[in-house]
Length: 130
Image 1 (spheres, one colour):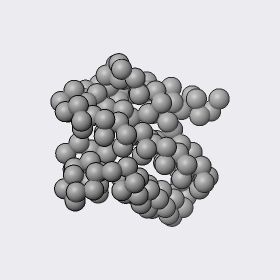
Image 2: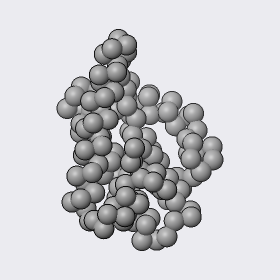
Image 3: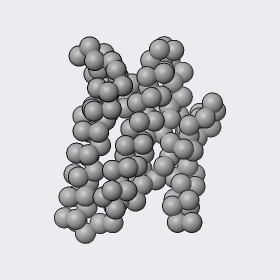
């Protein structure tokens, strides 16, 4: 599945197909998010679960070229914007971890370069309840 990963996500995919522009990227994101949310809703209904989706956090991007950093930031931000809109439209709870992690010091929210600290989820859940 193509998503926001560095190695095989949306950015490498669009570089490979030669369509590195905002319109093409937004279309890809919209397609991924719509299909993902529909699938999650379908699976949750089958299992009688309450669905809650959390967004994509900002990553620390330490080992990424400056041009790729700009595209990655754009992709992650757009992914979260579209995911928030689609979940709201479908009545699904959305946890905005991007809002908390999008800063110049995003590394403080990570256990390592990939995984968020547990307290990030706890804080975001508190915001949802309030």
